[in-house]
Image 1 (cartoon, chains in turn cyan, red):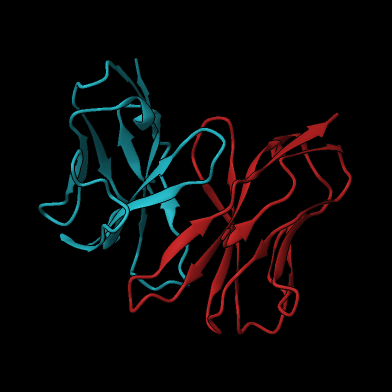
Image 2 (cartoon, helix red, strand yellow):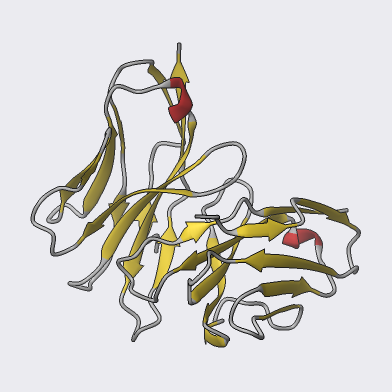
Amino acid sequence: EAGVAQSPRYKIIEKRQSVAFWCNPISGHATLYWYQQILGQGPKLLIQFQNNGVVDDSQLPKDRFSAERLKGVDSTLKIQPAKLEDSAVYLCASSFTSDPNQPQHFGDGTRLSIL
Amino acid sequence: AQKITQTQPGMFVQEKEAVTLDCTYDTSDQSYGLFWYKQPSSGEMIFLIYQGSYDEQNATEGRYSLNFQKARKSANLVISASQLGDSAMYFCAMREPNFGNEKLTFGTGTRLTIIP
């Protein structure tokens, strides 16, 4: 089974620029998550989708971050404008259902550096 | 307050030895789940093992086992017969109920280095 696909793998931008990340979850996985992992910390949930609806975006900085999953499959996460503190790895994960006992499967992440 | 605490920032272990990675958690819920993930230098998070709060037996998956002590609120990961490929960051995570919007809270991780 193909895993969670993310692109790009690395991105370097200057502050105040915009950037977008793409995620393709495991086929058939209805639940999709975006996490932010700052160096030296564990991942922090930004947003959770169930199919194409948002379940939890309480920790998403909505003044600059946005995410969508229009057809309930692929998802994009955008930052506009970027700040220095947005330098992090952005991880996408998916699970078959929102069953909390099911593990989430993660992609390789996008490493974002803000200059 | 920290919900997940991993007190060992780094550990060095000789190859073939067993290693225990510590994890304590804080919750007032009766129903919760605990997960361990491995993150190699390549960056992906690999699911290792899961323990539900109502599970009476400690979880095991191959060389991984979870030493679950509910009264002490600890869920330590034990890796038997460590291998060089076990060198990675290890994260403990807890799932708490949240009206159907359960989410994982991760600890800060432990960097494990296996010495040949």
